Length: 340
Image 1 (cartoon, rainbow, N blue to C red):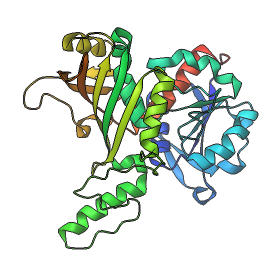
Image 2: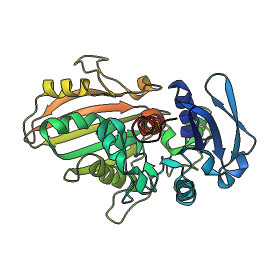
Image 3: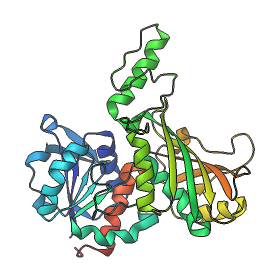
Image 4: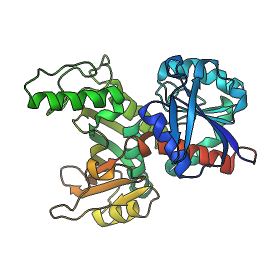
């Protein structure tokens, strides 16, 4: 006997990846429900290689039928449906930003702060962090354990898949159109994304930062350490899948490049590919479909005391969203929920 699982937002990029990941990792599920908005009722989505699931309406679903619900349907849906599901006895793992900073809601990267899952029962809701936050804290956790991070300055290079399927279509259509002299049509982005980069993700805040930059700051502190200072610049780039990050770190005490490489290499979920030669580093294109975060270009920053810089990349749809949520569910059933 296994668990019963629902995936809310099953027709979206991340929802489909959640279903694929559950099947690939052979999650102990007896039954899986694919849920989405009413306009998707009757569509089918794949679950593994052989099974197709018919999509049902999330708004009218009885969540008492399932043990765990993986949500990837946006903040408004999470705001309305997550408490309903939680009250019905279902544990919600939500991929939106809505619950991440809510007191009493654990914000989890299992390899980094999996023990914090113990507090899930306060609200029966667990938050999945921002994709860029996940890959950064995964790389930095072993370094923080070694030398205590004081300050992080990060610039992100985020793929369009982080903005959804329509954003991916916009990059494709603009790129194709440029070759036939069609004017670029902007719908998902504020400026042309093809052959361009846009230093603007999410809405602007009063201090000039965007909400994406704010998320990286507050989420890193909640997951890793509230004393760390974080300054982020988040940029959208014309890449379909895979986020890159240039990270500069200042530590409380000395740490060598060699020790940093070893600590990250030994940490679960992190791979180090760092050779000071042509092709001796990893790019977003190479990590599509990979579970791990990859670190390259580790080097000393001589402009500050105890400084290092590094480059990290990850599949934002996989470890940055779907896989992390499934790993939360795996730890939940292994350590906290009643055995089935």
